[in-house]
Length: 340
Ligand SMILES: Nc1nc2c(c(=O)[nH]1)N[C@H]1C(S)=C(S)[C@@H](COP(=O)(O)OP(=O)(O)OC[C@H]3O[C@@H](n4cnc5c(N)ncnc54)[C@H](O)[C@@H]3O)O[C@H]1N2
Ligand code: MOO
Image (tube, rainbow, N blue to C red; front, side, top):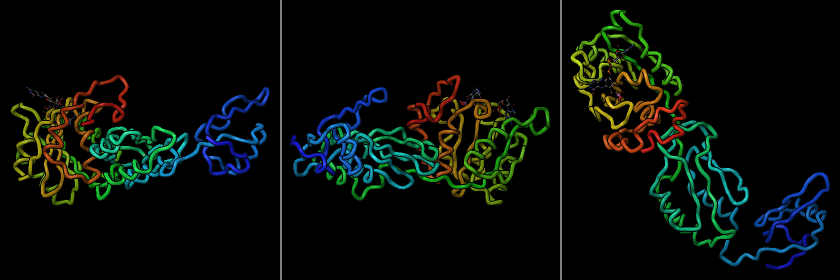
């Protein structure tokens, strides 16, 4: 460390904490070690009685933690993401808009594996609100070798962004409620309103809602009708398990849809079916989606609204983190459920 006249220290890095005491008003750290001295700091430093200060001497090829955090932020943040000014060497990484958070775990691990870099995030494949906290980044020492940042850049070069938020699309949604007991008016439809609320959360419109009996051909014809109407998402509720009156999986299959999975390793939501009918996503939703606060449906829905193509492996790997703990106050997606 070298001693520098305070007036000549602008742009230099403070080598130690500086305490200020104003009797009766303030006692604490006025400037922290590592602070990059700005012209507006000079007057306060002189008022504290510091005409000379210890300056951290940066070796050639080293950069300050603030600059390193900014460089890393620029490298890892893709579309839909921004980051804050560094404070004490750390940036916060935030969502610009509501959407689906995507994180390339392999790239994240590779950058952290370089050492001296801390890049911490929440889990991906979940929805995130505008300005929601995605993670934070800092380097561990006060200064870091430029080469470390260059190595991170090399890892990320020509790859899709490590972090991005994909905006949700508005999908014209059709709902087919199955159940002869509902169709015949023996009970009131309680499934439709649950679905309407979940679709509204994605600012999307329900273009058609029909209640049909447990008859395979009727369900099938209605799915095809919805497709012809221009539905971009088709949701069929009920009749998904093993009773003789459970016709929904057979009806979806009979439309010619490509069944991606019937059965998900998620509780609740085990009997969920996901298919594509000429590219239009089709859900078969079991009774638990009406009853339980959070199910396999809530895990998959943000991905569908972000326009992602769901493949079988996406569904079969949902078992890890697929058991809901049914907490008294549900904090999903801020919990382990659906983090696969
Ligand atoms: N032997 C087995 N039984 C069940 C299994 C199984 O694997 N083997 N799976 C269980 C799981 S998991 C679930 S989830 C449910 C799936 O139920 P379904 O999708 O077949 O639902 P339904 O039989 O059609 O109805 C169940 C229940 O909910 C009422 N319901 C249905 N739709 C509506 C509606 N629109 N409004 C109001 N109420 C509705 C219906 O009347 C029934 O009471 O199966 C387990 N059983
Ligand atoms: O499909 Mo049922 O999900 O697990 O309760």
